[in-house]
Image 1 (spheres, helix red, strand yellow):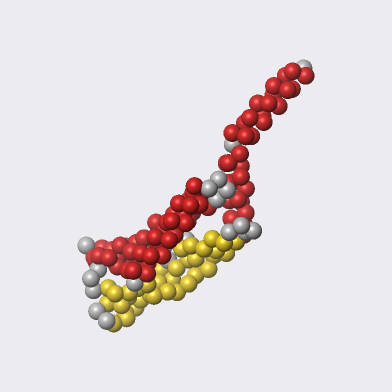
Image 2 (cartoon, rainbow, N blue to C red):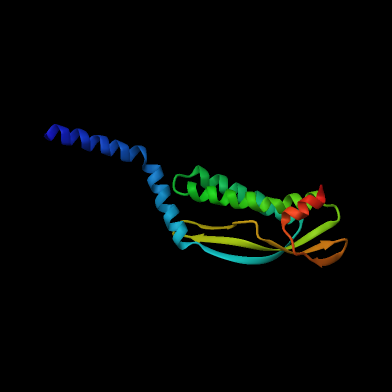
Length: 149
């Protein structure tokens, strides 16, 4: 009976070691989900602005995904960049659009080691700067993308 307990203990210990990175990432994900602050910011963005911001966000996502502790958070950061890339596409394919005024969801997470801030979704287009004039916009980014094509 003692041998069986030792063998089971060793197997359990090895299983925990094999999944240690998943356990740690899940614990940090739990902390992220309960301590993140989601706010909205209204910004005027140009193609260069959004290109640079998304480049830095994707770079941060890559670094987080490569870490053991923050890997699941890195997935969320990448998803936010992918959602916001619609603005990059719209501005690069519409020659008559210079800027967009958008309301963006921004997620901030702070722990003892890091502060992570990123665009966490598609947001909403409020106005467009078209041919030198600001115009109200009551549609989606997908509608702007259809106009570009």
